[in-house]
Length: 109
Image 1: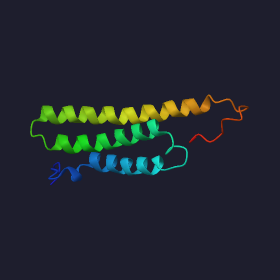
Image 2: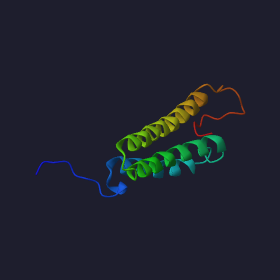
Image 3: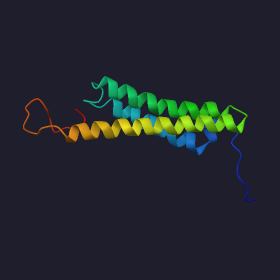
Image 4: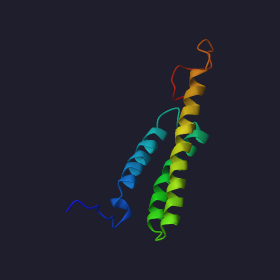
């Protein structure tokens, strides 16, 4: 039978599985030296990753397709928020003056 499989639990959704793995990786990243001291950035990426996972789960619990779609929109926005925070931090690290003794070449500082 070549039909679509129906998810019985939100954990069955490939989207949830991928985002959960991303959340785990973000938590690992947040513990790296330099990042764990950048409280605003760390908290933002951890919260955005967690929000994405939570919204897929919550949307799955809605039986109205329109409500489910709304939660998936929020999920997408959360992942873009995390991506934007990372890009901002990367650009900030790239703009540091290499001759300034108060900065390092470590992009995680």
